[in-house]
Every structure is written in C-alpha cells, then in structure tokens.
Image (cartoon, rainbow, N blue to C red; front, top):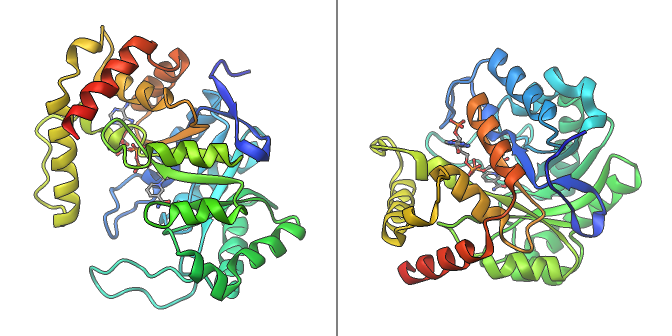
Length: 313
Ligand SMILES: NC(=O)c1ccc[n+]([C@@H]2O[C@H](COP(=O)([O-])OP(=O)(O)OC[C@H]3O[C@@H](n4cnc5c(N)ncnc54)[C@H](OP(=O)(O)O)[C@@H]3O)[C@@H](O)[C@H]2O)c1
C-alpha cells in the first residue's frame, strides 16, 4: 500500500498517484537526442517506480526502447499501474531526414498501427489511456476521423480512455471538443504558460497530467553545458534559468532542496491530477517520492513564490 497522495483523474475515475512516472528517459541506447541508459538500469528504475507505489506510467511509441522495456521489466506487474501511451507517432513509415523531427500522422490506419504496436511491445491487452501526441489541430483530427478510430479501439477493449498531449494554441479548442478524458500539459514554476488551461481542462471534467513538472532538473543543475543543444532548446533553458535566478526563491525553501521545492510547487496547482516526472536515476526517483509524500507547498510559501515568479514574467 502506497503512502503517496492520490487524485482522481477527472472523469476516468481512475485513482492515481499525484507523482507519476514518465518513461521518456528510458529511450536510449543512443540515437537522436537519446542518452545512453542500459537495460539493467531501466529495469531497476521501472521496478523501483512500482515499489514506491507510483501507479501511473506515461510513455510513447516515440521513446525509443521505453515501451519495450516496460514490457520486458514490469509487464508481470501490470495490475499495479495504469498505463498511458500516445498515438499519431509514425509507425512503419520512412524515417525523417537527418536532424528533422519525425512527422506525426493522424490517419485511422496509423493510429491503429500505433496502438497495436504499443500493446505488443508492452505485453498487455489494454492501454488505460491513449493520448494524441504532438498537439494536432482540431481540423486535422476531424479530417482524419482520428477520434473515431480511438473510439473504435475503445469499443474493442484495447484502450480505456482518450487523451490529448496538448499545448497552445490548440489546447482551448481541444478542451472545447469535449471528447478527451485527460490532457497532458507542460507546467512548472518556470513554465507557467498553461497554468489557467490546466484549470479550464479540470473544470471541463478532464484529468490533468503535468509534464515537465521538475523543469527537467534545471533548478538543481550547476554549470549546465548547453553547447550541444539546438538553438531553440538552448534559448528555452536560458530563459528558464533567468526566471529561476530572477525570482530569487532561496529564502522560501526553508531547508528544501531546489528540486523538492520545484516538484512541490507543481503539486500545489489546485487542478493538477498527476505529474509524470521522468528520471533514469534511482536516487532522483527516491528524492522525488519523498518530496511528493510531503505534498503541496505551505500556502503562504506558494502564494509568495507565485508573486515573485509573476514579477519576472
Ligand atoms: N509531447 C509530449 O507528449 C511529451 C513531451 C515531453 C515529455 N513528455 C512526457 O513527460 C515526461 C516528463 O517530461 P520531461 O522529461 O520533459 O520533464 P521532467 O520530468 O520535468 O524532467 C525530467 C528530467 O529531470 C531530471 N530529474 C528528475 N528528477 C530529478 C531530481 N530529483 N534531481 C535532478 N534531476 C532530476 C531527469 O534527469 P535524471 O534522469 O538524471 O534524473 C530528467 O532529465 C516524459 O518522461 C514523458 O513521459 C511528453
């Protein structure tokens, strides 16, 4: 039995831990932007996630070896966790040109092929949630009858609930569609652009799954080497670093580490259901679990942090 705080994932009624796990860090073996994480480490981390009582895991066909590793190392514990993956990721399509991001394809055929592949890779007969990856516009979904294909997979018992990994500018439209049981949305103290939309999604009855909830570890990183990153990622990190330093939050931490503070800030959003923190490091996982057990920040600290973060934009 886990002592991690839980929440109901909107109208799915799934009772999930407010600290979830994002499996993206387990994608390498090498390749585009993938750090090297070996099989032994992946197996240890996935089992430690479940041993800690975390019961919500997010992944994607796009995350290299991650789905296969879930199948290999924890499919025998499938009744201990809810499993969310994505769709629209290219399946059996030509790889992108060097340096290009893979295009996502929302045809009925590609969506079905992706779900079937996820089931096979993860050795399971159902996915609890399938989210459209890469934020497709409502018009793209309608032209392709993409939601209808997920409904068909739902009626076959292969998936339970429908989700969207969405961001501005399309997210308000996605919420208005009324078909999504849960939304995956980026958010942290340093990335607050979707703060109100998390509330809007929850008020519409959907669950809210926060990604980026520890700001990719940036508050704890010293002398970050950004030299190998593409320009747009480097600029994003530099902007967040300026926000973190400009907000001057040190005196609010009261003995907390920067990572505990950052995670508990995310947990303080009144309308978040879970935050799917990614890590391939067992010590980081244990620290995140300890922080999540403590729950949201004390309200006076949270309000003052919001005020200071507002002042740096
Ligand atoms: N479009 C989409 O749908 C989309 C996009 C991105 C991500 N996601 C999902 O969201 C999940 C999380 O997103 P994210 O990786 O962007 O953000 P995140 O969870 O904020 O950051 C993960 C990074 O933070 C580091 N980290 C975690 N805990 C730490 C700790 N206690 N101390 C220091 N560093 C720590 C990890 O490195 P270590 O491994 O060294 O701990 C990892 O590099 C992904 O795994 C994926 O499932 C979805």
